[in-house]
Length: 455
Ligand code: BGC
Image (cartoon, rainbow, N blue to C red; front, side, top):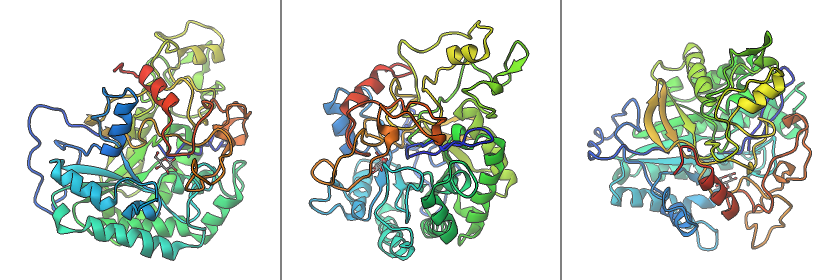
């Protein structure tokens, strides 16, 4: 899922809902602080949970080099909490937490992803709750999750919760008079249920004591433009201030979840110009202030602190699929004197448009999960598990290949020529993909092949 906003006009780029951290090895993880004593960075010195359900799929598909990496566990329906027989989920929430304790892990990452009217600007990750079903979100989803996470047997785990991918950013860029507005996002803005739901999740989960809430902050190709940057920070701040516990409930923010934006553009600097014209005027950059996630995440952190968040908040960046290695990766700054050629030949992000978000052709595994990799960054994480599809390339009716009744978004169709949310560009999606969340072997193999750093 992902929405993007381009330039003054704003494009909704769909970012799929799309990160984890590893522990530098040798020394054993230090004992976690006493229950209920939060640490500043929950990834520091932590041994982060490796989801065996994902690891088994990765190993079975030639991914033994990465199968030992931590990935996010997505709680994307009410059924995902208990994983009843026939639901398609292998392990319940309590099962993952028990596994983590038994395996000697000290941190575990969940994605809280089931808001009413979910994914209002895209169709591939439409949710099970209707726009008005906020009470069910509270009582049938967040309350049971909080109750299970609150069991004293998990008190020594640092429980990291990624809060509701794409939701608040959608309210900024895909509503009202914006060219990319959708009726569905307008409904969610008007009824207030994204804000109410996020506030409820922050309040309930923070109250547990050993939990860390990270709110989704889209990515540079969505809220990097001036007219989105400040208003997003303000919406995040007003939302958190309305939670019980206020801004204290927020440990930090995550960028690039399930997306493909490059961590760093080594050969394309936002300050560069060609023949006196700034690269910001190129088609690719389109007046954005940022060309990569690291610079965006660090600047956005500063903005968030000035908007009222604690000065020690940390950022996470999902690097699972933003490596952009392989033979198409540029190795130097272009010498072209044509602005667009210069930018296109210099950038490592090989997408057709920065608003493209579904199963991107040519992408590779990015930086391995790592704690405290850069100033202001709590961790590089793999929240979208590599190998899991962003959406199907054609409509798959509800049935064995689509048990959850996932929708079809043409941004996942390689023959689609786009819309205002991706500058009317080709989708750049791989063909023959299964529904979102399902294993997509061809993509997994390409991600491995194009990994950067190489595996
Ligand atoms: C899907 C979820 C899935 C997640 C991780 C999302 O796009 O909607 O169902 O769990 O990706 O793959």
